[in-house]
Image 1 (cartoon, rainbow over the protein chains, first blue to last red):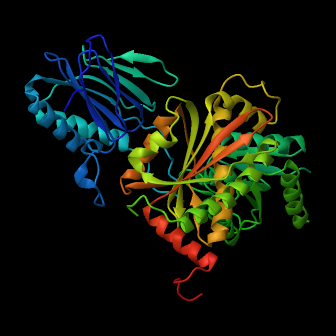
Image 2 (image 1 turned 180 degrees about the vertical axis):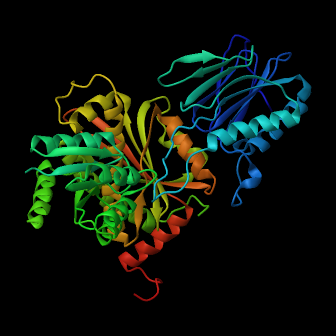
Length: 176
Length: 123
Length: 212
């Protein structure tokens, strides 16, 4: 079952989306996810049915993993979109009706190279690029974005109107 | 005469600490560098008597810095000034020509003692 | 190691390792700030990465997160966090000035926080690498002042490229006089885990370790 039955339409629920997780919400309900650093929050919305889905994506590509693992499809950009679209389809919502917003993909830590060290953090940038590529491939328009930079973000995604409220620790909040 | 000192550390906080300790004991800080490459450049420019050298720094680290400075001036007096837990690197730096080392966190007095020891060796 | 099971022997051994490391780190920190520092008995967690935020998370709390990578025999990640409201007191202590002197986090104070990470990690790794007879070299530190979860999640994302579970050694840092607290996390990567386990076996004389 995709949605919990609730007694009255006034009941409002904030549905938490954990790391590498994805959830659906409808009408008055909202989807929230905390602490997007390099991770990307991808929100998809069908305005007609006021149906929203949000994934908390950790990595760009399930095929690039260097080891086998059993894990949630929402962990990777490619498989997250796939599972979300499949679910919308089952609900009778074709991908032509969907719009997307993305948040996150920050570069929180830059480790300067030294003689003793190797790499740096660019997962955030790669995550954003991968999600955008997936959106392009599936033809879903990207209608809002707050990505990159070096700040962490928390997001509340409103199913009723598709607004994403982006909160930061020290730099205030904004709607996209 | 008080020795002229070059401070090499990527952390501006550490440079400030060392500068304060040194100048309050009458030493002249003649230059500050943030990595091994800058250290070599400034060394050639200001010809300090003593270099205080951190080990783990961005771009060019302290070991490389020691090697290059010793190449230019085999009498260079370099004291390694690094956080605990870097023994392997300290050994490498000493082999490369550093004279002594100070472990962070340090007491101001131990910095001065180390410098005085190097100064005595000179005589 | 893909199972979240860690037998009691290794749990105790990791805890002892954490004790050795954090004892030394506490000493280094108290020298640095000129105050008595206590560190808690380390907590050892081996859990799927996705579950880490729910278990150690203090969701929206703003912290300074100092991040270092460890190279050598035991590739690991280190995260040191201090609550935002403690940062000025902490840097006042480091700069040897009365609490309340600093009013904003300027460049020198940010540098001091990074150096704090370097010194704590150095002391922690020093004790640990001596005990295990392994080489552990920290990178230069990186700093983010942000929500604890965003800081942690970023490190977990990096870790999840090669690991399914995270082994976390968490120690709490406490300075009672000024109510400063912090957390120290050591997160060994997958291959490091095997290395540590065989080094523990060697150090503790457990069977099946080959000749000495």
